[in-house]
Length: 374
Image 1 (cartoon, rainbow, N blue to C red):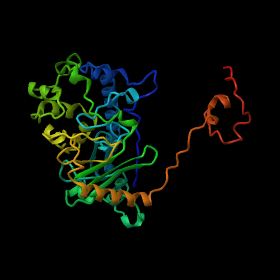
Image 2: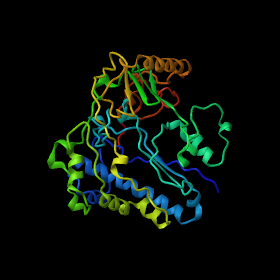
Image 3: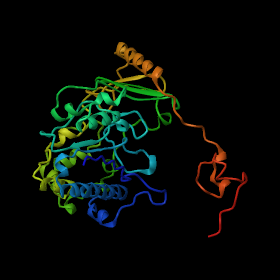
Image 4: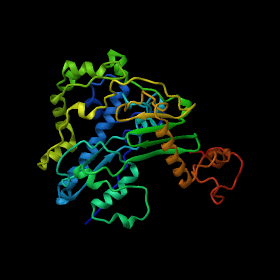
């Protein structure tokens, strides 16, 4: 029978302030070659996530269902870095963090796997989160026109065959609260305003780059690693050079990955790509400062994915064209439903119970109450 499963996993998000990174000890030991304690715990959570996905793949592989199944794995945003959530994620060498409009905040990691995809490839065209609905609906045999007037675009044919470029622009956001906006227009990206008064607009190196004591101990993990690639990874530069291929490391990862083992057991091969096909190369671009709180910035993302060179002054026509597109979006946008915070919602007024505070049937007393004795 047809089915749709949406699994929103909690890993690798941080937890409570008293236990930010939690993972079973076996996964922590599996990543003992990572010396940075936070990164080790982060990797342990990621390993647990991998096994969870592997269990799902294994369950489906026990039947013929997997031969007619599409797996899509994606993220909701870039990593929290620069102190946000005290996390250990990294967007390096991309600019920015979670909650920003920089590439480090909006460029999501994703993969798509299905026996219906004949040729593995790295897909480099634009795709937006709203595209998943029409794309998967189309893949399942539905007529996208039945979905009505939606923002999403059917990307299925392009993803499977590599033919065509269905999407040519992406509205990253128009935020009337923070008064910021960003739009990708072909190869160009427009950024106006920023989050957190610009405190998260930088490029944030992993701690291992600046602290040799935290660098990975590959020998303890049994993985092969060339000295050249090690030097490339730890090179403290904004624009790293391209690394050589390291098939030993890739093969080790393939065989220790639960999902990969199951896919191999089905006789399916995994995509083999050298690191230079998958990593972001900042390129040798000149730099020109962007101050989005003062005036809009423009970047050529194809040539400058790390957003180091603001070319707004050199391309005023493109800037005006994008601003007209943003004006059109603003006319059609739905106002946010956010409500201003109020002290009336403080749970101390309701016996320290978290509940809809405007529901009078739940709360009869407007005065602070002491907690119930246990």
